[in-house]
Length: 583
Image (cartoon, rainbow, N blue to C red; front, top):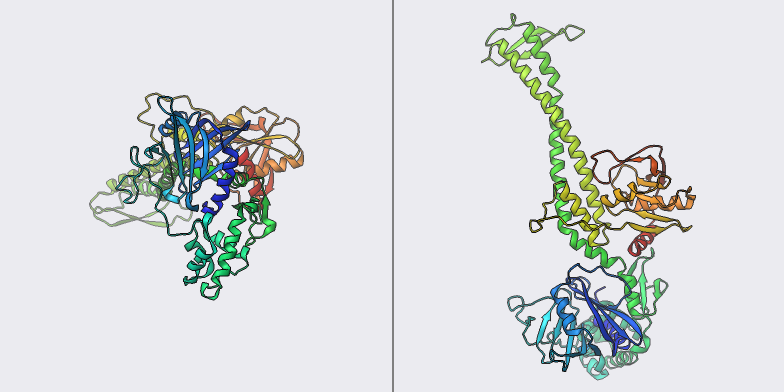
């Protein structure tokens, strides 16, 4: 869910309690629009995540780990310079809006104490993170906004900082029954829409929940309500709102997290809402894997498009080669026509449109009509048919060679496309790019004179019900390394006949039926046939798996295998997906 001002007010309270007087130990920037600030307070470390991502802007304390770039971005370096060692003195939410303001006591360039603010705006595509000095001047923003981009506000280094334009809405912190009643009395809207219209930070979901909390149907027109009574109920709710804090995570029937709330919402099934110790913990559970998938989709979008374009090109080429093979089926007829003409030159006349001769290749010795070019002699017509025969046979050989190459390249590309969904780190993504570059599908980076040593990504690691370790490759290079370095007695699995991950059960002892089934389900999940109701998965001892010389990464052959049919339920897909996010 997009973080609304109502939920943000609970988070602001949580951050004030955890971070008041906290000291900034370190600042990292794992993504272009996301900061991770490590703070020390009360003998504990806190990791503050501040994200201005347009799709899911948020602030929270997190226990999740994030991959940092090899070189910290300039904005990160600037924040380290200004905020290293600073202490948090206040966390505020101005006017109940989707803005958090962190006030920090820092040291100036001359060692004198100064106060700076870090402002996080959680406003969809307008989200931003800005560092402001003690004079109210912008030091820098994570996303620059010039006058061409916005006529309302400029967010550039050196410009005076101004808060987002104030909306004509009531501040929940100072809301009174009289002020709200005055707004509702003149509203020609249902109550839930009027609350969104007139109360700051009130999103649609929260407005409906507010109606449930005060006992008024949300669709009730304001004209039919006692505005004063409704205003008093809403004001009383806000007065006691902090005491309601009891964060929950809402899941669907399959266990997939779909939302988080600062307390159990009556407008949703209470049995599907799980209690968490803090709102940040509920957010961690909600974003587990979701944030990573979105980031990887964004980073791999260009590569994905490139792969799909190459697949489309190869499929067109394959269709042309198949047409050539169908045409080459007439090659034998051209040879027979040439030989029959050569044997019957005395019967064919120059200028004739056809020659009627006995086909001695036919057991019935039937006559055959051979079309002739009237401008050529019978001998030249025979030579023309021999030439067509040689051309058709050459085209057939070329088409068969091309189809072999096309088949191998399509397998590589379709496997790479499937592997993009398994990327958990930029290293995993770099391995796929490296493989495609190596096979000529992606141009090497012209700015890189010498290829650096490729960092090796790590496979997924799972534990079977009996504790046996199982590894799953995320891409073709990892599949190769994992399989070729496995011990001969370990069990190897792969979805039959489709792109998918190599799976290794890390024991040379015979795996238990439960472990084997779990490994087979992993092989099914990490394959193109994940949703097949009965997918065949092959399993065999690693010693029976071979890689042909010159074969592309991840392509192997195997013998002495057995097959198990696997179908994944919706619950199992969700469970494995969660485990993969943690692996």
